[in-house]
Length: 207
Image 1 (cartoon, rainbow, N blue to C red):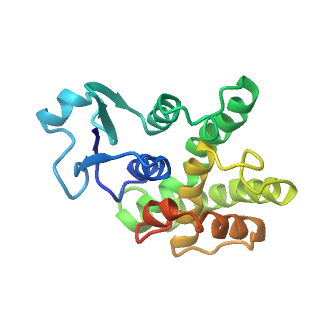
Image 2: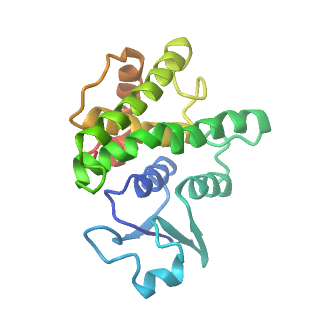
């Protein structure tokens, strides 16, 4: 059985949990990270020397980095619908995974750390305002993309790209922030919420 190490309220762990439920994969999860056993514990460091979550163990194969884990699991289980074999279609999915983990996440991360975690030096108005502006700019780009196409980020079908983007869209609506009106993003959020696995791990009680 697949083993997943990391707390269930972690954004990156939730990506893996969402995919497992989408694919009907059985797994065993163990809490590690903030509020649970520390990631610098030697037991965890033996699995993941980088001391980050999630880590998965699949029949003895140890793997870190959430988006790499998504690609690995989808490929292993032949889910071409989620992660296409065709190189051009695959690249269209990976664009969204990479953009979500970089440009879109940059502002989101600081706003979350400052507002929810209360982590210094992010918990001051200057940091929060600056990074919310960055996040809002990227969300407007997502709005324009979805308004012109969709219904999912890589086109007509749900893919791994939506797992990366969908969790950040939930955080956008879950945090106590001033948001511009983004009707196409709101419709996308509602569309994802029709999926049981997203309701369980995406738009749940965790921002």
